[in-house]
Image (cartoon, rainbow, N blue to C red; front, side, top):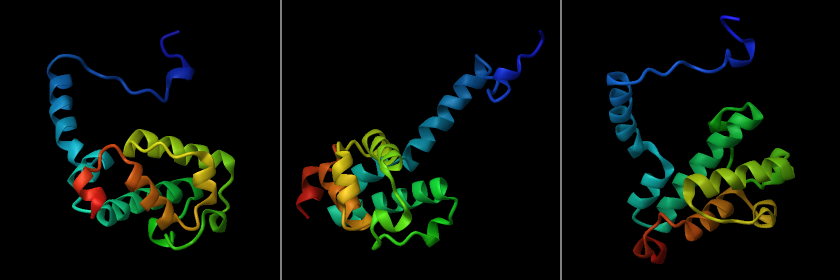
Length: 133
């Protein structure tokens, strides 16, 4: 009864001083988020490159590949993307890039780069000036 196997994957989180330390580390990590990178982007091309890297990393995780093996010029179907992966990708893009793209847009994108550009244009984090460039 001391330990329940259902909870073995969870990590213990300390309160007090340790949680304040974690909060300061979390503040430093914000500069590594996609939202921060998009807000810092100078043009939609720069933003699309950042989003493309994020998509490549996500695909690498899903398909157990190296991110370097993901070619953004390829279509999603080239990697065997089905509707379930498209939903996962769409949700990630909505949460991290602030872009509401439909599953149809994800599945029908001519390439991963085209999808990244579409997400950049729709992102709520990209400034209006950057969207125009």
